[in-house]
Image 1 (cartoon, helix red, strand yellow):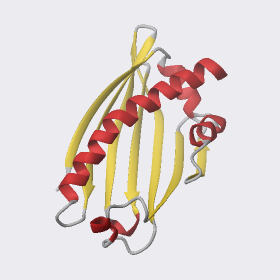
Image 2: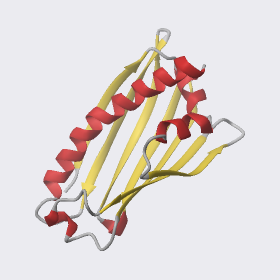
Image 3: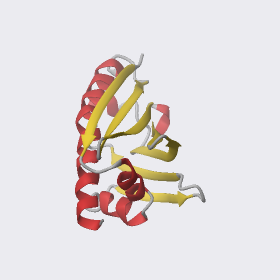
Image 4: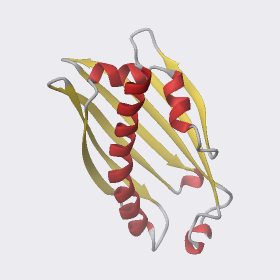
Length: 166
């Protein structure tokens, strides 16, 4: 099974400001600050301003429901990979991939930052897949609900970070 999602968020920051923040390592380190379970594994910006980031989140087993923990062979890790690249017409396109250790599931989102006057809008569309019998569908729904909150919250964080760091 899988669960699709579409999330639209707005920001007072411009597309250019957000893309510039994504191209700064200090932004990503600040974004992860206070989250001892996450590490910035890789950060690259190519000559054209394309950004690729890889993050690992070490979740352990203790946060998992006991039924789910039975399917996890060790500690649970989430491997994140995000890319962002200018697409012309003032737009920036990105992809987000998350893979759970042990082949338990994944998610993928196609993202586009669009100009909206002097502000911007983020549109994220994607799919969540959880490969755990009996509870996969419920977890997909829960993850989808979480994404509906976390994606706008991350954009709000980015907007505040830009205001603080220029």
